[in-house]
Length: 72
Image 1 (tube, helix red, strand yellow):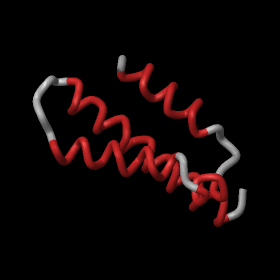
Image 2 (cartoon, one colour; image 1 turned 120 degrees about the vertical axis):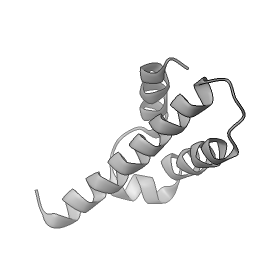
Image 3 (cartoon, helix red, strand yellow; image 1 turned 30 degrees about the vertical axis):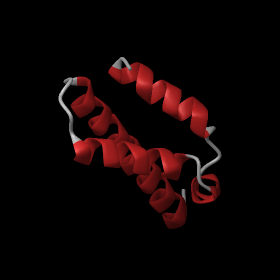
Image 4 (tube, one colour; image 1 turned 30 degrees about the horizontal axis):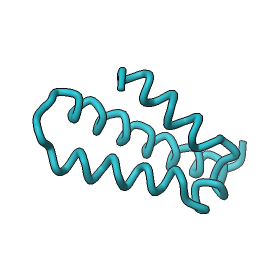
């Protein structure tokens, strides 16, 4: 794997981790505006053209898998 692929994978992985963490915080039942913001930003990124350039993953499938991991 070349360095650019490594960077692209790291960006996608970081967004997935941020999304997962935000979901866990929101699952606690308390209002958390930071977590809501992070979740919204991640969803925008996953559905963006930039995400499509970085990876061939289906964004909706990724979102569903992350939601299922956290139990949303």
